[in-house]
Amino acid sequence: MLIDPHAEAVRLLTSIDPDYLGELARDPVGTIEVLFEVIQISERPPAPPGEGCAVDGTYLPGPPPRITIASDVAPARRRFTALHELGHHLIEYDEVLNDLEVADAYRRDEDICNEVAASILLPEALVDQWVPAGSFTAEDVSKLYASADSPSRMACCVAAVRQLHVPGCVILGRADGSAEFISHQPA
Image (tube, rainbow, N blue to C red; front, side, top):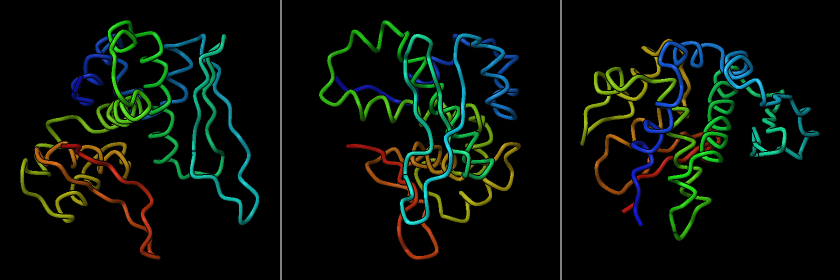
Protein backbone atom coordinates (compact mmCIF):
# COMPACT_ATOMS: atom_id res chain seq x y z
CA MET A 1 0.00 0.00 0.00
CA LEU A 2 1.33 3.41 -0.95
CA ILE A 3 1.03 6.19 1.57
CA ASP A 4 1.82 9.88 1.40
CA PRO A 5 4.50 10.56 4.06
CA HIS A 6 3.61 14.25 4.25
CA ALA A 7 -0.10 13.57 4.71
CA GLU A 8 0.69 11.02 7.41
CA ALA A 9 3.02 13.46 9.17
CA VAL A 10 0.34 16.15 9.13
CA ARG A 11 -2.17 13.63 10.48
CA LEU A 12 0.20 12.59 13.28
CA LEU A 13 0.81 16.23 14.19
CA THR A 14 -2.91 16.78 14.78
CA SER A 15 -2.38 14.94 18.07
CA ILE A 16 -0.26 17.89 19.28
CA ASP A 17 -1.86 21.11 20.50
CA PRO A 18 -1.29 23.61 17.63
CA ASP A 19 -0.18 26.24 20.15
CA TYR A 20 2.93 24.13 20.79
CA LEU A 21 4.03 23.64 17.18
CA GLY A 22 5.89 26.97 17.12
CA GLU A 23 7.56 26.08 20.41
CA LEU A 24 8.57 22.72 18.97
CA ALA A 25 10.24 24.53 16.06
CA ARG A 26 12.16 26.91 18.32
CA ASP A 27 13.10 24.53 21.14
CA PRO A 28 12.27 20.93 20.25
CA VAL A 29 14.11 19.28 23.15
CA GLY A 30 12.61 21.53 25.82
CA THR A 31 9.13 21.37 24.33
CA ILE A 32 9.21 17.58 23.90
CA GLU A 33 10.18 17.31 27.57
CA VAL A 34 7.13 19.41 28.50
CA LEU A 35 4.59 17.82 26.11
CA PHE A 36 5.80 14.24 26.44
CA GLU A 37 7.02 13.94 30.03
CA VAL A 38 7.49 10.19 29.60
CA ILE A 39 10.19 10.62 26.91
CA GLN A 40 13.74 10.76 28.25
CA ILE A 41 16.09 12.85 26.09
CA SER A 42 19.85 12.58 26.35
CA GLU A 43 22.97 13.35 24.35
CA ARG A 44 25.53 10.91 23.09
CA PRO A 45 29.16 12.01 22.99
CA PRO A 46 30.84 12.88 19.68
CA ALA A 47 32.30 9.99 17.74
CA PRO A 48 36.10 9.66 17.97
CA PRO A 49 38.04 11.30 15.08
CA GLY A 50 37.81 9.17 11.96
CA GLU A 51 34.86 7.21 13.31
CA GLY A 52 32.10 9.66 12.47
CA CYS A 53 28.60 8.33 12.80
CA ALA A 54 26.00 9.28 10.20
CA VAL A 55 23.19 8.78 12.72
CA ASP A 56 22.58 11.95 14.69
CA GLY A 57 19.76 10.56 16.81
CA THR A 58 17.97 7.43 17.92
CA TYR A 59 14.58 6.56 19.32
CA LEU A 60 13.99 3.59 21.59
CA PRO A 61 10.36 2.91 22.53
CA GLY A 62 11.25 1.75 26.03
CA PRO A 63 9.66 1.87 28.49
CA PRO A 64 10.43 4.60 29.06
CA PRO A 65 10.76 5.98 25.52
CA ARG A 66 14.20 7.48 24.88
CA ILE A 67 15.56 9.94 22.35
CA THR A 68 19.31 10.29 22.05
CA ILE A 69 20.90 13.14 20.06
CA ALA A 70 24.53 13.53 19.08
CA SER A 71 26.16 16.33 21.06
CA ASP A 72 28.42 17.42 18.21
CA VAL A 73 25.79 18.54 15.69
CA ALA A 74 24.88 22.10 14.75
CA PRO A 75 21.77 23.61 16.41
CA ALA A 76 19.68 23.41 13.22
CA ARG A 77 20.55 19.75 12.73
CA ARG A 78 19.83 19.14 16.41
CA ARG A 79 16.33 20.62 15.99
CA PHE A 80 15.65 18.50 12.91
CA THR A 81 16.98 15.37 14.61
CA ALA A 82 14.92 15.86 17.79
CA LEU A 83 11.76 16.37 15.73
CA HIS A 84 12.57 13.40 13.48
CA GLU A 85 12.92 11.20 16.57
CA LEU A 86 9.65 12.60 17.94
CA GLY A 87 8.13 11.35 14.69
CA HIS A 88 9.24 7.83 15.61
CA HIS A 89 7.49 8.23 18.96
CA LEU A 90 4.28 9.40 17.27
CA ILE A 91 4.41 6.44 14.87
CA GLU A 92 5.07 4.01 17.73
CA TYR A 93 1.67 4.85 19.25
CA ASP A 94 -0.30 5.29 16.02
CA GLU A 95 -2.71 2.41 15.38
CA VAL A 96 -3.36 3.39 11.76
CA LEU A 97 0.28 3.15 10.64
CA ASN A 98 1.04 0.13 12.79
CA ASP A 99 -1.88 -1.81 11.29
CA LEU A 100 -0.82 -1.19 7.66
CA GLU A 101 0.93 -3.91 5.69
CA VAL A 102 3.77 -2.24 3.77
CA ALA A 103 6.76 -3.65 1.91
CA ASP A 104 9.33 -1.44 3.62
CA ALA A 105 8.11 -0.16 7.00
CA TYR A 106 11.59 1.18 7.85
CA ARG A 107 11.69 3.45 4.76
CA ARG A 108 8.07 4.47 5.32
CA ASP A 109 8.82 5.46 8.92
CA GLU A 110 11.99 7.37 8.00
CA ASP A 111 10.13 9.33 5.31
CA ILE A 112 7.28 10.15 7.69
CA CYS A 113 9.70 11.20 10.45
CA ASN A 114 11.52 13.51 8.03
CA GLU A 115 8.16 15.00 7.09
CA VAL A 116 7.22 15.46 10.77
CA ALA A 117 10.41 17.47 11.32
CA ALA A 118 10.05 19.50 8.12
CA SER A 119 6.35 20.18 8.72
CA ILE A 120 7.07 21.61 12.17
CA LEU A 121 10.09 23.65 11.09
CA LEU A 122 8.65 24.96 7.80
CA PRO A 123 5.00 26.00 7.58
CA GLU A 124 3.42 25.00 4.25
CA ALA A 125 2.61 28.60 3.34
CA LEU A 126 6.30 29.49 3.64
CA VAL A 127 7.32 26.52 1.48
CA ASP A 128 4.72 27.45 -1.15
CA GLN A 129 5.97 31.05 -1.14
CA TRP A 130 9.61 30.19 -1.88
CA VAL A 131 9.58 26.80 -3.63
CA PRO A 132 7.13 26.77 -6.55
CA ALA A 133 5.39 23.44 -7.05
CA GLY A 134 6.68 21.48 -10.01
CA SER A 135 9.63 23.70 -10.93
CA PHE A 136 12.17 25.23 -8.58
CA THR A 137 15.87 25.88 -8.33
CA ALA A 138 18.52 25.48 -5.67
CA GLU A 139 18.28 29.25 -5.23
CA ASP A 140 14.58 28.91 -4.38
CA VAL A 141 15.42 26.35 -1.69
CA SER A 142 18.15 28.66 -0.39
CA LYS A 143 15.62 31.48 -0.12
CA LEU A 144 13.30 29.17 1.83
CA TYR A 145 16.13 28.43 4.25
CA ALA A 146 16.93 32.15 4.64
CA SER A 147 13.29 33.04 5.35
CA ALA A 148 12.57 30.35 7.93
CA ASP A 149 12.30 31.22 11.63
CA SER A 150 13.99 27.96 12.67
CA PRO A 151 15.94 27.01 9.57
CA SER A 152 17.17 23.50 8.85
CA ARG A 153 18.84 22.55 5.58
CA MET A 154 17.49 19.01 5.88
CA ALA A 155 13.96 20.29 6.44
CA CYS A 156 14.32 22.44 3.33
CA CYS A 157 15.30 19.37 1.28
CA VAL A 158 12.28 17.44 2.56
CA ALA A 159 9.91 20.33 1.88
CA ALA A 160 11.39 20.98 -1.57
CA VAL A 161 11.17 17.37 -2.76
CA ARG A 162 7.51 17.40 -1.72
CA GLN A 163 7.02 20.17 -4.31
CA LEU A 164 8.35 18.02 -7.19
CA HIS A 165 5.13 16.03 -7.75
CA VAL A 166 7.24 13.56 -9.81
CA PRO A 167 9.89 11.04 -8.80
CA GLY A 168 13.19 12.69 -7.95
CA CYS A 169 15.63 13.79 -5.25
CA VAL A 170 16.81 16.91 -3.53
CA ILE A 171 20.35 16.50 -2.27
CA LEU A 172 22.14 18.47 0.42
CA GLY A 173 25.77 18.35 -0.65
CA ARG A 174 29.03 18.80 1.20
CA ALA A 175 31.94 20.91 -0.05
CA ASP A 176 33.82 17.70 -1.01
CA GLY A 177 31.01 16.70 -3.39
CA SER A 178 29.50 13.97 -1.21
CA ALA A 179 25.89 13.92 -0.11
CA GLU A 180 25.07 14.89 3.47
CA PHE A 181 21.33 14.27 3.16
CA ILE A 182 19.05 13.05 0.38
CA SER A 183 15.32 13.48 0.33
CA HIS A 184 13.40 11.59 -2.33
CA GLN A 185 10.03 11.51 -3.99
CA PRO A 186 9.45 7.87 -4.94
CA ALA A 187 7.65 6.75 -8.09
